[in-house]
Image 1 (cartoon, each protein chain N blue to C red):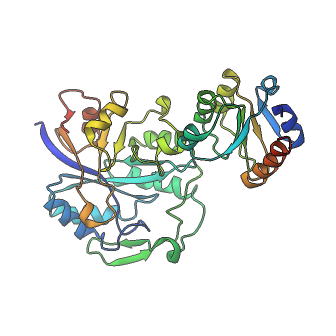
Image 2 (spheres, rainbow over the protein chains, first blue to last red):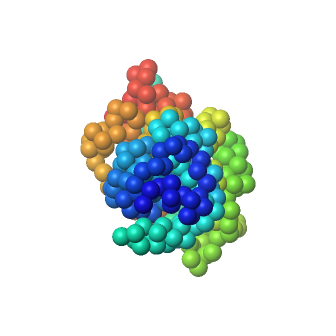
Image 3 (tube, rainbow over the protein chains, first blue to last red):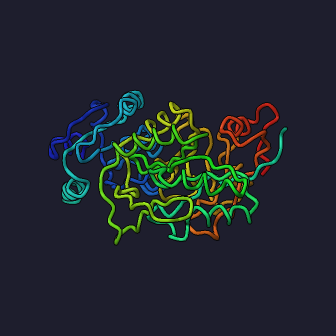
Length: 113
Length: 243
């Protein structure tokens, strides 16, 4: 499924690099420990987290993730948004919790097999 | 005159809920003396309320105490703050307290005992000291520097509550004065992994008396001021780290 379809279905607020959301999403990964995301996420994953520090953008680039969903209405730092634009990493926000949004995303992606 | 000073810059007291209740000022100072430590950094979680007692208790042992705090950022990164005297440390505490939600549950996390230099209980701290402040790691480092303190990322070789674990890697623009290696990693190996980009210290992070001085940093400095320590971290004016 394309990231932009997921954004629409989950009603996500896209904060950066909207033009980069026309890409296939491989799977999701939910974690707030960035060292764990570096170790275990895979290319094309959507990453669900509550971390907002600019290091999340570097990790997303490093692992070639499809994009990031920040949960619980947490607002990313200015520097994070600036870096995300520069590095073309789509960052989205949602008011839902990591549990809720992970469940919904799992339902969407696994249904499509 | 430049001399070698042995420092353990990361010690908890009975104020930290996770520390042993035997971590009283007298006992800490006595154990530090046995371990031939010259400089103690007292760094309880998000509080400096036991620092005055430690300063008094360490006097008779001729040990310098640097008032400090192990601050928890909103990313749950632990940053050590170290100062020359109590005033800026209290100022930092005021800022942290106003950004530290929650109340301690002694059953769940442990007691937070504020004591005098004799170890007599003055009061129990009610804040959720084990919790995270709402300040970002950048704000924490900026705040410490604005108060002329040293900001050191705690136990970066470990995953839990370290900047490397929580944030994947150390942001180079953060302006940290040093990164601290725990007793779990050899200093030599740490130099390969983190140096020369970041100056290194190693401290015990003692929560129990027997851990005090388990590892320590040997500074070649004039006196125990943060200015001298900073020079040693930067390898300036003949000041250096001898580990």
